[in-house]
Length: 358
Ligand SMILES: [Zn+2]
Image (cartoon, rainbow, N blue to C red; front, side, top):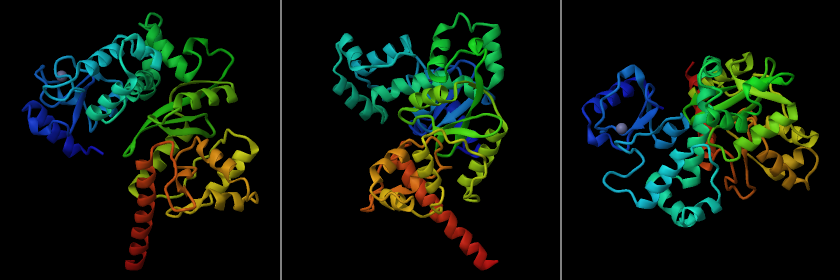
């Protein structure tokens, strides 16, 4: 979480090109669409045009591309040719989905690429390319309708790259909406990273971290199941969940009241409803959940339904762990699962202390 005090500090560091801030923050420049390291030699942007990020990945997800001058994805003074070659290849075609075959075409060994990227940037090359791709498509969600309107009236038709990326992720392009239902999608910044919320005027359909693996497939399934087109925008349930999430991350709210629409089979819905009965700060095992719905032998199916949850945090699939006490899996990443569980425990114990004092 970057506070406004930190923003002023970072901006000063940027103006002074302070090298001790290398790796501490990255700055996205709204007017140019590039992101830089603190020491970039290029002319410095105005404060109001800066967005600050703690990691390069966050800057990529916010749709900024790496600056050509300070090369924010390279380690100072050193980046392997292989890494540079791949970063360049992504910029040539940022919407491409990378497969093993593509590495072969570039005469690059996929496992070497994975290792070198991980070492330099803390993410694999595929994650890098995906962050960049998602960033482009989500830029338009983040900015809301105004941008889409602008795209429609100006460069939209000619910008086929954007249109393709957007329709791959969100379904029909805005011009083809016609007889579809409409769901709106918004970008929500949270202290655990950006999330995407999809809702109609009545209920919330999807809430996920934008870097969740498989998010594009998930959105596609939702789109088909609801026969909807998904366009950027806000609805009442999105405003409601945004506010509730704020309270949740502040540790002030643990019970969500935003109406949910659960897109799943009757069995999945049964599991998801059961998950909502696990109190904050507590955990259950898959076997516990299976027993609670009266199907004690169905714990594998329960685990699958748990993984298919599309309403992160609100349907607390993060509260389900392995019977042996291990954390088990989490679509949004284990670090987040651990954080959420600790956060809930701490928030509740603070609440109890306050009650005692009061
Ligand atoms: Zn730069």
